[in-house]
Length: 264
Ligand code: KIV
Image (cartoon, rainbow, N blue to C red):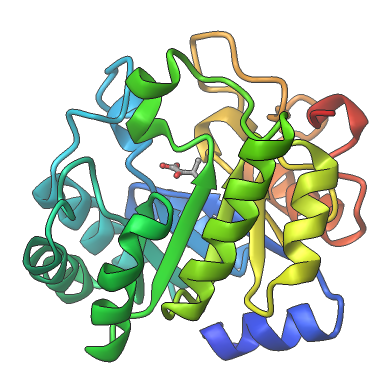
């Protein structure tokens, strides 16, 4: 695999070629994920749940994401590394700039922020300062208490329109990528077609430009019940490298996610 940059992902979108994304939190798994030719590795704040054992991502700090980003980066040669900005680490523009700097200096090549058009000035500022950004809309887990649980978003017309408007506004403000989490397939398709930047789905159906899963979920090492949008690829494969390869193949040939992993 060539070294992946944001330009690679834009070209893949333009050519209708799907790309694969997985989370990672340590150098060893990141190495195997990169060797399986997963284009993008996300050091997600999901580490609060799958590594630290919390119920939500809220307790995660910038220093913890920076620690895991540095570890992941040491295991990766060619995949693009994105680091999550944790809960309340971007509540003002200056705070966002300071914390994004910490993550970029730890080895991230892009930072991801959850939220809608209220973040436009922040995306503009980071972008202007040379920090690539990924937006995250739909079910944004840092707002779980506002949503009253981990619920599918964008099912009614007003909410769907709001998510589309937010996506367009964040793209205009400089976002380089968008993650769409737990939205109906049809809305994800509409947003993917409306945006020029690549869109990555999780529980968003098969029509986004890329797919992301939490690596612990797709290797079956999540003790709790997993959401319907995940799939345990280790069940049908004998070792971790083969399971990772199967994930990449199924994302690229469009067999994952299937209808059973998607929402109407
Ligand atoms: O934290 C995370 O792992 C994420 C993905 C689920 C998109 O944000």
